[in-house]
Amino acid sequence: MKCNIESFNPPNRYGNSVGFTIVELIITIVLMGIIIPAVAIGITNLAVINYQSRNLVLVNTLAQNKVETLRSFGYNSINNGTTAFTSEIPGTVGGPKSATYTITTPQTGLKQIDVSITFTEYKVSRTVAFRTYISELGVGQ
Image 1 (tube, one colour):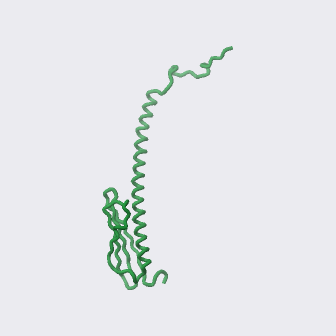
Image 2 (cartoon, rainbow, N blue to C red):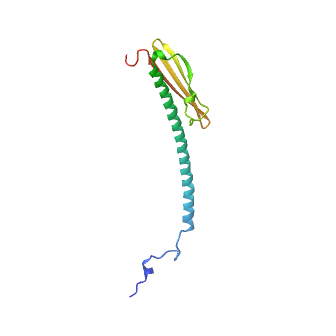
Image 3 (cartoon, one colour):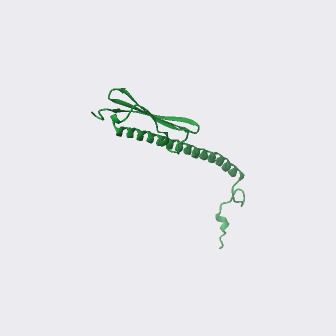
């Protein structure tokens, strides 16, 4: 007794044709037309956020380093006034950019340090500002 292999395949409602129908292809094209631009926009947004985060980390680190450098000099070694340190801003941070610190004496035995760094991201000016104090007696005294 011979067995016909074709009898094991269920009948196709479109006959023996194989492949995708026009409706399936149109649905796939529409879905890809929605998914691909959404993924592209997401990747672009991630690149922008990464750039902004990097700049923020760089200027925050620079400001903290400047404050710690001034602290290491001690109270008597730092003089009142404004000093620019724009040249210390990394080149990867968008320009125009500027960085200054201002030292004042709000009361006897206390110095106030204001650090301000301004830079440009995507044609928008951003400013990071820090304020700290250095005491004549030092920490915990």
